[in-house]
Image (cartoon, rainbow, N blue to C red; front, side, top):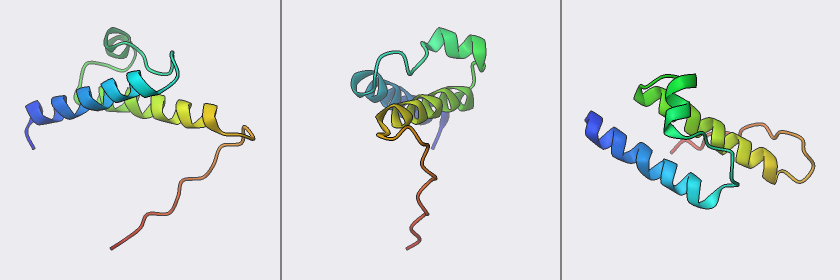
Length: 73
């Protein structure tokens, strides 16, 4: 996978978060660049933070859940 494909994948994930997650969980791209940096990994980190924030908001009892075990096939 080349850098262009990685950027496209991150843009798709960003668009999905913006469309389906609560407002305010995801920083703008400019904010990400200022806080984390401009690299693809920096964008990925910001996206993962937004996903975790969404899951925490949707948690009924407010207690963070441990990650599910990986399924190995």
